[in-house]
Structure formats: C-alpha cells, structure tokens
Image (tube, rainbow, N blue to C red):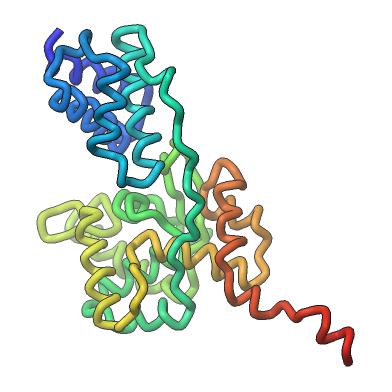
Length: 277
C-alpha cells in the first residue's frame, strides 16, 4: 500500500466515525508528515520512527500537540493495519495553562474600535454567547428563533447541540442581519464577499482591533469565549450553568475558569482583617 492509498483509507474511516472536518484535517496531516519524515511505506513504519519524529519535530511544542499526534497515528494504524505503534510510547502530561482573559473594560474597548457595524455585531455576538469561531461561521439564519429569543448551535465540538439566549442588546441588529441575508437568499447568518466566512477572517478582525485598542494581551477569537465564561463566574453564575452554556461535556473543562478570575480573588479579604478589628 502506498502513502496516498493509506491516507485515503484513513480519511474514509474518519468520515465513517463521524469525525469533524477539523479532526480529519489534523489526523491526515499528522500521518502524512510521519510518512514523509520516515520515507517508508505505511507497513514499514515502526514505533522508533514515531519516536524519532516526535523528538525532531515536536519536542518544543506543547504536550497537547504530542498527544494529538499520537492519537492520529494510533487511529490510523489500529484501524487500517490492526496494530498500535503508540502503545509503548508514554503520553506527556497535559499542561494546565490559564487561558488569556480580557477584562470587561477591555472587551468593551475592543468592540468600540471595530471599523464596521457588521464586525461589531459578529464580535459582540461571539462574546455575548461564548461561541467558538466555527459555531459563529456555521450559524444559519434558521437557527435563530426570535419569538422564543433563543438560538440553536447544532453539531458543535463533540457533536453536541445546545441553545443560547439571544442578547437583548443585539436583538434588533440580529433581526436586521437575518433580513439582509434573506434578501440575497443567504443560508448563513454571516457571509463574506466570497461567500462563507472563514475563521481567518474573524481572527484578523480581532487581532487588528486588539492592536488598535492597545490591548497588550495575546487576544484571539477564542479569548472572547474565555472572557465570557470568566465574566459569568465573576457575576456569581454557577459553574454548572456555565458548563451548559459553553457546551462542555465534562465540568473539569469548565473548572479552569475558577482559577483565572482575578476579580473574584480581589474580593476575598484576609481573615486577619476581621480578626484584628
């Protein structure tokens, strides 16, 4: 079996398993790079080849990069060739880094410096509902129910559906956006000059606005989602409710936000203040 045949078989198996386009792309890319690196046929690849690739190419990357790479190789070789090349390779521990979070003041400033009404609406909406970039891009006009004042995010990460409340502040602007899209027979809530928006479009908008707002943090689209969750926590919203709003399967994923809320920490007084009154 040559490399191209092997990669095509992986793609078929991934699609049968209902994996996302993102996962398919990453898994194909990982296996393609390993084959190119080793310059061997798929059947000839060994555990040592996998280890050598990691040492040469992933040593300076985050542990999650290595974990994802190993998952991609394991899936491919176990599914196609019925052997696990990664069984003898110890997975690195995942780093638990606190996410970058903007303050409420910084979010407001970022939105205020956006150039167009459409940009303001997209970025405001993404923050207001804690959306992932892919969720905003794939949101369709029929996913919004203005009578019930809710929206539906369908088949998001982990193949999960969830609902969100349409913010009062954005209600009328979103209705106008829906009408605009209907006039051009648009299927999606937001589109670009060449059709469907890309994540790169939105990342550029946020990156450019961050610079103009003179925010020194390394902010991206996903930073708005982190900020949404943290601000809810600061406002006293139960973390289990935040878990549902974010669409997390496991509450341990949501609990990272309990470690980043500096505003909450500032409210805590030392017991000595009460003791020495």
